[in-house]
Amino acid sequence: MCTPAGSRPWRPPHVTPLRPLPGRRGVLRGSLAASAALALPAAVGAPPAFALSGRPRAGWGVQAGDVASDSGLVWVRSDRPARMVVETAATESFRGAHRWHGPLLGAGTDFTGTTRLHGLPAGEQIHYRVLLADPDDPRRTGEPVTGTFRTVPLGRRRGVRFLWSGDLAGQGWGINPDLGGYRIYDAMAKLDPDFFLCSGDNIYADGPVAATQALPDGSLYRNVTTEEKAKVAETLAEFRGNFRYNLLDQNLRRFNAQVPSIIQWDDHEVRNNWYPGEVIADSDARDTEKSVDVLAGRARRAFSEYFPVSSLRPGAREGRVHRVVRHGPLLDVFVLDMRTYRDANSPDDQTVDPQGILGAEQLEWLKRELSRSRAVWKVLAADMPLGLVVPDATEGRANIEAVAQGDPGAPLGRELQIAELLRYIKHRRITGTVWLTADVHHTSAQHYQPARAAFTDFEPFWEFVSGPLNAGAFPASALDNTFGPERVFVKAPTAANVSPAEGYQFFGEVDIDGDSGELTVRLREQDGTVLFTQVLQPGRVGQ
Picture 1 (tube, helix red, strand yellow):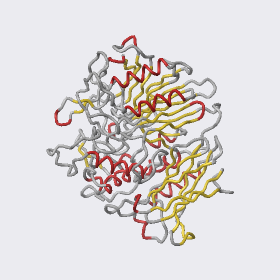
Picture 2 (cartoon, helix red, strand yellow; picture 1 turned 45 degrees about the vertical axis):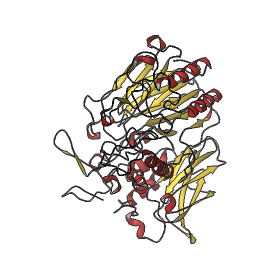
Picture 3 (cartoon, one colour; picture 1 turned 135 degrees about the horizontal axis):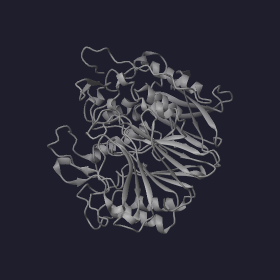
Picture 4 (cartoon, helix red, strand yellow; picture 1 turned 120 degrees about the vertical axis):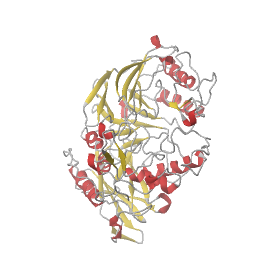
């Protein structure tokens, strides 16, 4: 652990407890107790300070993920080898609890583990607690850590509310105790969402966090630091340390205990703007490992270990990030992976591009799943925007990182694949599609309209952008007119890399009414203030 010269060693900042939500008082007590117990690791791989006690501890909190009507995943990390045990009940008293025997947690998965719960009642609040047992003596268990989530209802009357954002601890702006840490998570928890969709850049493996950074007014932004965050991540231990770094924040741990997640990834889980087959230039002295495929393999393994993702097995090489998470008759979430299968970044002006940004196989999977979906709303959770120009200035090349390349004419490069998808949605009469993304570190709403576009064989649709959660904020991206976007709303700084201390941190909310089926999008600031609202109507191919 590093601290600024002359300052006191960092301790988790005091955070005012959230207003207890119905049936969640026990969760708050349990998660706050875990927060109070957690201390920073003293060195790479070192356990928290309480590890000298004789029983396993779960000081990194708990998470639930990919919750369905009758199932869900529960995650935990131990400070030592332990057997994971999960108990579930209908109330926080845990009377009549059902017990689930989970995996043995060991060094092979960095002492993390996930247990799948199944046969749960639909549409109910599930209280769970995780116990870690000594592998040699199951009677010796650590203090339980509690959490809760709601299973998906079979009917639509209750409606759905979820949040989304992305980009955490980017550009060297980490956990700042002077600001109360990642306080945006407290504002999100107060909305009591059914789940949180993280649209990628859960970590910045390529972004070291120093003890301090200078602010424009001459003051210092003070970071919590760890040894793994002091350099660009290359080893498996360093990637794991990046994921573990964010869990030092008590706001995030408390949020994880209250709100289940749907997690996807983008570039910074590995390296800025990476693509398969990339070789890092020798001139980039920060990296000793030059194969991005090697780095991506290590990052993917750590990603699978630190998040409960239904399509990945912790520590395994197989599995995939893209998947459909179904939330009853109102909503299907199509989690896209615009990183693993893409072609190389280039000027993106080729007239034929079968690989694109999704890869041919994922595109066919997406078409098939969209056609099968009977949900009222189909959210396309993209880790990159469609019509916003995102350049890749690596080594001064005029390459493109996302889809749009700034040419306002007919589709070129990766736009060809998106045009094919949009055409498919139109001709198959697939209703209720909405695009959500993050990546560009500002918030905005774009309406895509064929009457304004060079490519016209699609129905109008909306794309909403949010983030960052805690990272540098950047000016609004340029628009590419190929698909006719109109920026209806934007909030972004005029300068680059504005720190979280200066604001410009955002999240979005989606609220689907169970009676009318209307979908309302709200773009919010980090304190929860609503900046923009858009209401969409169900049952339409275009909006």
